[in-house]
Image (cartoon, rainbow, N blue to C red; front, side, top):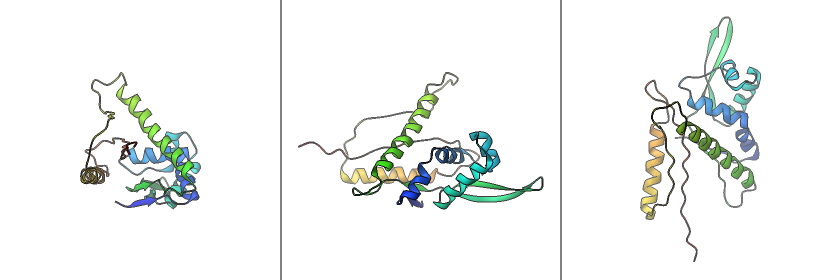
Length: 180
């Protein structure tokens, strides 16, 4: 899968925008490309604002113009998300670390909030979803194998089809350094 590295402040500023995050989530959940007009109704902002945000997201490789169609004499543009992995973190000397940390906190919080509201919704007979926390003990080889399994599986199920439904996730894992 293609990786989009957010390396510059300009790229990070484009990605961190809350309206663009909402827009990306809507596009990623959708099975079909969407028009700015359609998206504007869902987000409650003007179609021209949606078009502006789409162009910004397109400039960093996160969405693309899928096709155009003539709708009642007007050329409608249909946008879709690129199925890419966005790499947010930089290195230890990164001058944008505070912005990156804020973005990560926001992204994980959005997923967690939606998870909680979905899992505990009263209008469903069965709970679909889960949150698991804990500690596993892995060798370096097992950790690498686990990461490869996760990455390969997520790449395999990244593209929507008529038989699938969108599932949102936020995975976090890291090696714990024991205190000496």
